[in-house]
Image (tube, rainbow, N blue to C red; front, side, top):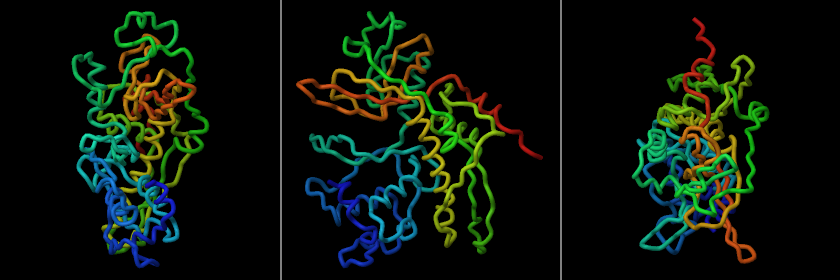
Length: 357
């Protein structure tokens, strides 16, 4: 398939180096979607359609210089993987920090047919935020099937689930596994302050400045940017800033003002795709298996009724859906992350160290 082809093709094909048949970008920086489409049309040559991607309202926010992104001996897959880590999804295009993105194969309707296409999109789109606010404010009667799947119930505390019209017999979960966030390991590997060496992009590229992004500021970004400033509490810890680790972010080459500006944006993207993405994917998670349904797909919310917390806190974000056919039974394995909890933006702001004057 397409991914197998990217794993077997050296990045040199994208610059024309070493091979007569190579794609020649002629040194022009390109975003990750442009590169994927060019690879598809000129190397993979998908026969069934002209495009390998499906449109979304978000675009990659940076352009990449392929020659400085990867060693020429690396594969196209390696290059795309690196580029995705340094890219966020912006609704205004290149130049501004965006939301944490995914770039994955999805089922897309093309000319009335279902086709597997790559989709670049934000984990939390404007529609997700609209749905969260609707649940929080008790708004009903609006179709949110594009960002919401269905309702499930767990345990004996959900007495109302027996008469709840939104929960059918097969959505009462009896066996499940909840994995709490391993805060100790996350503090060792991801959750901390981030240090980066920056260049001003002026005439003297040897002049650098230090910049540190505090973990509490990153948590604030999660509410202000990923959740668009929604009045919600999140499932994040308040870490003591005096006992936190500092991680370093590597940035791409800075050879001229344009590439320096891109590199500055790329390190911000890298932090978002490391830390903010962990809030959405490897925080507290639930895994369960239920009777199969073709409508289920990742990157949507499910509602899990299990206690008396506020309604919006019952929303879990689905990161993985696996459809299984075995011994005549059709089941769906679901892995979802709990992103809402009891930590407020005010508490996060109060946990920050005072600014030194």
